[in-house]
Amino acid sequence: LRAMMNGRNGGKPVAERSPLAEGVVEQDGEAVLARTARPERDPVLPLRAAAAAAQAGLPLSRHAVRRLATTARPLPTPWPAEAREQLVTLLGSGRPTVQVWEALEAEGLVTRLLPDWERVRCRPQRNAVHLWTVDRHLIETAVRAAGFTRRVHRPDLLLIAALLHDIGKGWPGDHSVAGETIARDVAARIGFDGADTAVLATLVRHHLLLVETATRRDLDDPATVRAVAQAVGTEHTLELLHALTEADALATGPAAWSSWRGSLVADLVKRVSGVLAGEPQPEAETAAPTAEQERLAVEAFRTGGPVLALRAQTEPPADSAPAPSSPASPSPPSSPSSADGPEPLGVELLIAVPDQAGVLPAVAGVLAMHRLTVRTAELRSVPLPDGVEGSVLLLDWRVAAQYGSLPQAARLRADLVRALDGTLDIAARLAERDAAHPRRRGVEPPPPRVTVAPAASRLATVIEVRAQDAPGLLFRLGRALEAAGVRVRSAHVSTLGANAVDAFYVTRGEGTPLPGDEAASVARGLEESLRT
Image (cartoon, rainbow, N blue to C red; front, side):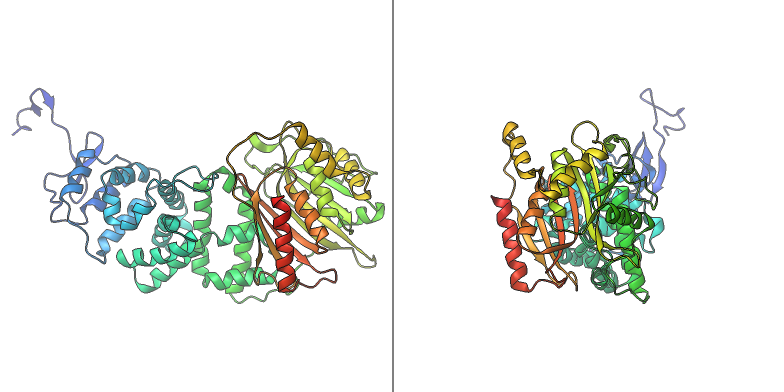
């Protein structure tokens, strides 16, 4: 009748209503319930309305959400297939998912659908590297994962895993372990079969496995790759875990992901995929040096001192590099920090030094003296070409200047020479600087923790250090390891926000792993040195 009366009702045009889904229409730029909708008879309607709104890029009407919250029937357990499909559609809608999910959450519909959500709702994160509360982070991860659905064989499992990967943070203990149990319950509740439930549980349990292994373990160690392959199980699960890892990191914050971290994770995934495919794996733990590394090693051996190569690092490391800084070659110009660029890891610093004691603390101390923040570091022994006896230590660092620009490589080399021959007292210099500029009082960080990673490597003992990041931290750790009489085979340094997570592959002097008691003693000594 209103349409017959020239579309007028009290002087106002009648709003047009366009169908979006069964029981859902668009009106005045919102998704609303159709006049024929019967929430009391249609338990899938809340998810269908939310999915339709997100797919159309529309907000879900507050009136519609309230009506659904008060009248909609609860879903049976397990959910019907349509309900599960509508949840996946909602999560895969990208950025519009956020406002629709928040509308559901405001009226308690999310907790009604997923009771375990209540424990993470508005829960703050423990780590300051996170930008969002736990619940918002889970939705942001789903938003990021929606962009990766074309590269995985089961987009539905990826999106559900993104929604659930941190669901265990509302429970005591390791959130990955607790989350695995919750993920199994939720997956069964929403109607996944046993095989899919097992995959989701694996993804939640190991959602940190790839990034932690890639940044804290030696990827040239076959034991590292085999352990990841055993945990993941299948190539399809590995594919999903790779996408989940990137989505999780991107949704965490800028400090959690970079092109360099992405390249490490991709390298690990490639190696693990080879193991799962049955390809033969090399037994040697040390990869062959590149042409650039060999050039640095020969120059360091020829001159009998350290050789440096410094370059801006805005993309993952390539095989090419500038000429080294040595007594016979000029040092490259200093480069600004990459804080304004796409890569937050700063500048790549390659150092080759004839194999000797005290290299790690000497280099770390010199960098701390020059106010360079170490983002990542790797240390390994590089054998010299055939016919040349001896070996050279190669250190591959990513550093950034705390203030201003980086120092000249020649200055770094000069101080490193003095540090190695004992004429530069790094500890005293750092102590003088700390005394002149006392730190402000702030929140008391948790105490450091040093542990021995069990069965992490067949040819070395892996010691993990978790502590508050601070200038000179790596110098102190290097000195403590030297004092313990162990040899550092490789070091993998990772900094997330204010937290440093470092892994050291150490051996006895003859190159064998440390016995259990000796490894535990070294770990205790490191922890005590950090507490003083």
